[in-house]
Length: 326
Image (cartoon, rainbow, N blue to C red):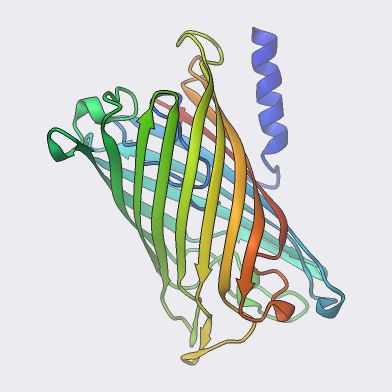
């Protein structure tokens, strides 16, 4: 069993990019109903509960002759986050991101904008209606498959990342670790469990503020995820649960703006298909490991033939998550 544990940890280390220790998704634990990878989970923590998490996302871009010699080649988004349960209904999360953005003539990397998120958890019971979460409704002790669990969240980023880095003498806003101005995210997530099957849904919107006459376009997301418990073992087993995950992730990108005017070669709509898995390992400090491959299956970009390095023109995205509950 010790050898198996070491092997799994080695696999995790290989899957998480090593350039440093990237974005969405709620708390994922070794307990409770199934949690997706990209779609936010409405799980909340017990009062005093603490989760330490890591997330990494590797993006490989399609490259085109017309974009040479400035093709974006790959991005790596990483973050460390800590979540704390102030009460069964209120959870706070602090996120420290690190980004690496590569193109044919060089790369920019560094700490990105730090984020703070507040989440409020509640549920709907067919017999009792809507109620805020109590001790029996948190991820660790969640009961009652008849209930639909929900959260609303607010996140704010602080412009702590560098946003003036040059490659070949040029400052490209899309190649910076930081955004240069505060951004705000509003989100709603819901989940309902029936036996071994959990459905998750999420709606969110990101709003970017202007800096130096430049403003990134608004981002809107609609995610739907199905999680099925393929294996459920004893809570004392090294691997107590193995979930299969299938997600549909829709993203609408507004146009970036400069001097108040919309920029060409920005914006559009993308739909991703994201199969994945999640493994619960309670003996490793209640660890939860997730892996997903995110593939664009449909897109309608505003000027696709000019948007190399835009969402929807990836070869793939690989996402890994690892969290520990204390």
